[in-house]
Length: 474
Image 1 (cartoon, one colour):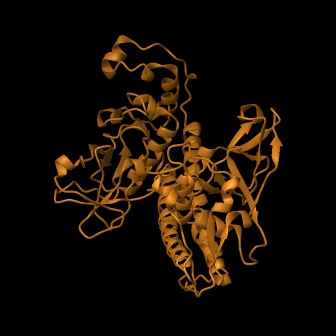
Image 2: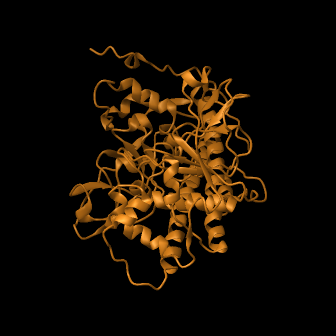
Image 3: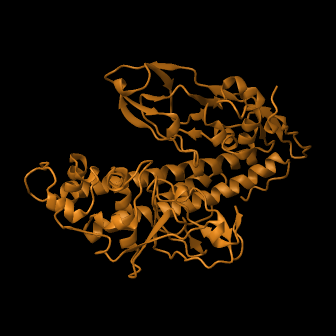
């Protein structure tokens, strides 16, 4: 017997004049059941459960030799598959494979959906995927899981979950087009971030001084006294080898202070300090928009922005400020929004330079992110659980002074607002219209447009679920 309130939730489809049909997933999905026997010396592209981004649905694949993989037999994957995590379903662990490579394999802890049945002639896998990423789907998953037990969902539960299928083929096409455009913007964001790292790697490699190769030496007493720290990590071979590549850059380096940045901790948002506090998931007049480190994505965007009202006056962030996570995940973002009142919390640090030079701020953020992803920030930080990187450590950072044109090339990948393509998008050309626009947009702009499409998609889905008429705006 189960006394969990969530197990007594039932959705009753509303009466609809729009021809919406609710069907269970077992009638709609075709699963890829094939397995691949792994050969130790072969190269594979592998995705684990953690490689599904629960915030966006993007899937990252890693190049690995067969002997590095966790199993001798793994699920086969392919471009266009939908991956449903059996253990993170309730967290929206559902992703779309937008990569097209050979020897693609996934963990056996996902269901690989490769197509849809002929249940409805208008149905597409992209349409189904859109509803698998919706709150409507997640709420159904929650209702059938025992909260006190290890949460897991497999193909035996597909008959318990339903999704709505619009009877209007244009609406199905519209949902599919919105979802495809979202998928491709997310892919562009990941590719932009990867290209930024590549450009930094190449510039550092090509710009090395002609000096003897790195040779490790034990720290001297003078070196320890100068740094004033006893952390073993900053004196070991890993840290010294990694930092040598930066210090050996031909054009030299500068610390954040030498570049004109001042790093400041964010304010405490505890109720005992604020006295009054009202939280909201939607923007409201007079509320603060919160840039919380936990919501900063690995690409320098926000997975979500909560809002807070308080009578206490809080320090405001300015466009061009760089916000960093002080502890745990040291992700970072450059604020490029002029429309709202932004602040952060005590777990966030922000770097500001009075020069208001966006190129300088964005380049600093991009290089900081490179330092973090290459493990250098973790070596500089102190403590466990990801480490603590307080303002006093910032001048340990060395930022290479890349040529202006190289900095501009890197910055453009993060921030590059360009006009929309000429002409208006039509239903048949909606995805192509966005593809054309994507080619020039930076990460910040791609994320902004992706979130707008996600908002539109949620509105459309809510209308379909409620049996209301959806007006396709084309």
